[in-house]
Amino acid sequence: MLTLMNMSHSLRHFPIPTTLLRRPQFLSSAAISHSASVIWEQRVKDVKAEKNLRVITNPGFSFSAAGLLFPYHLGVAQFLIQNGYIKETTPLAGSSAGAIVCVAIASGTSMEEALKVTKILAEDCRNRGTAFRLGAVLRDVLAKFLPDDAHIKSNGRVRIAVTQLLWRPRGLLVDQFDSREDLINAVFTSSFIPGYLAPRPATMFRNRLCVDGGLTLFMPPTSAAQTVRVCAFPTSRLGLRGIGISPDCNPENMVSSRQRLKWALEPADDAVLDRLFEFGYLDAAVWAKENPVENIVQGDSNVIESSIVV
Image (cartoon, rainbow, N blue to C red):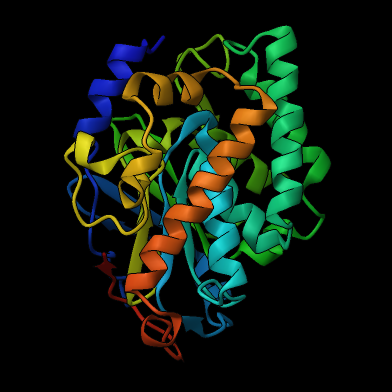
């Protein structure tokens, strides 16, 4: 099981890719793109589905792994949606909690409703415990609140990162989902902190042994030409660069690293969850002042390469 200290140290060493892998032009039974730390597998039916891929709007937004700091991402998303930065054609990507917020956005769920659901999950864990059972609670919540067509709305738009263990840990990007259950399995796997979500070291996803996507793809790339990265942790303290929205945007709202990590691992009370939501909203507002929507949101296009917008 990961300890607080292990997690705080490991966050510093997540490899964060800044470019998107090129798709191969010739395909047999499957198309698999490789880099030093990323595998992007597309089955034949996934490639066929992409022929109908709608145009996309730049930039895309990538949400970091965050644990139970999930309301921070919801607050950021609320501002971005309200102010026209995230549209129905905006590509999204995320790991762990970041994957959950991406699916919530794509499914059409309001961020206020998602916050209410988060409070339900947090109350359950406060009353009955978190370690070894959070995964079951998360799966149950997703099954109850995601709409029946969530996988259809996420296909081709949302990239979920998981970590494939064999033969060595590598990031795996998934952006096509066969069913609502397949989508839930992807989100569950992306959030699977070994020995924390369930009393086992790993979980199976599409016949692969996998764990939390944040271990290899802390903030995965989107399919847009440019990606704005959103991190729920203070990036200056983690030594991360090229981050658009983070608690560093509002130093006056900064809490201690120990307190933030505690909130990430154990469910806080509702007042703290509301506070995290507000912090995310305000940090996004500060970023937006330097990046007016009319300057940063570009026309629709189909793009293969990806870069970072700070």
